[in-house]
Length: 269
Ligand SMILES: Cc1cc2nc3c(=O)[nH]c(=O)nc-3n(C[C@H](O)[C@H](O)[C@H](O)COP(=O)(O)OP(=O)(O)OC[C@H]3O[C@@H](n4cnc5c(N)ncnc54)[C@H](O)[C@@H]3O)c2cc1C
Image (cartoon, rainbow, N blue to C red; front, side, top):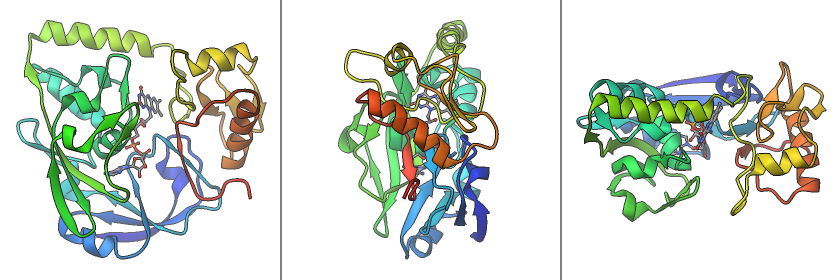
């Protein structure tokens, strides 16, 4: 286990966020000590808006053994989902294609039930192992319960490993499914972001509503609504959490949209 002071902007895809104490945990045996004080769990930081002032809680990040795995067995929750999407395709295993291009850790993807209109990670899970209140649990996805970008994992649970439920399929079938997902992603901005900023309301697209309200290209400081996709708020370089938050608030003043990102710390006191 390694404990160090870091700037969370170096650990989030939006590249914003102030100081925190990072607890890098290598082995499940270290989790009781790491969770002995208030904590948050950091995956790949691709769905987070973190305060410029940082956070006072410990930030636990899975390292070491949690980065390893094997598609025939358990996969570490700290490992990157895109690696497994590619590895499954290489091995002729189908089920992860809908997740192509999501820059998540496996654990973060499970917590958020990450997915696309082609499917979500919950559809590809056989079993989830998580640490909660000093114990390790193993549950089938039906026992946990998953919904649109959410899971029924208990508050504070740390996903440690998962077993995927993948089916053998001809490589060309897997390749054509991945090509369809990739084509749908091509319209997404390449700049620093945390993916879609707002959840899609029932029967509509947040991006369409934001575009219609005239926000494409709208800026606050170095934060902007992407010209390419209105549901992406991008960091043009050097944006602060406060600027991003002001942009979010400006949109929400006009549209009743729910933020997709998790907000860490106090952004605008
Ligand atoms: C360019 C881009 C494209 C994206 N496209 C998509 C998309 O198509 N579909 C989609 O669903 N999302 C998308 N996202 C958003 C993001 O990738 C997902 O929400 C993802 O699930 C977040 O995973 P993470 O590991 O980065 O988690 P983080 O952002 O680090 O954390 C998110 C949440 O998960 C929790 N968490 C992290 N690890 C664990 C763990 N081991 N155990 C328990 N809880 C944990 C955190 O505490 C936090 O609550 C995109 C993001 C970007 C930047």
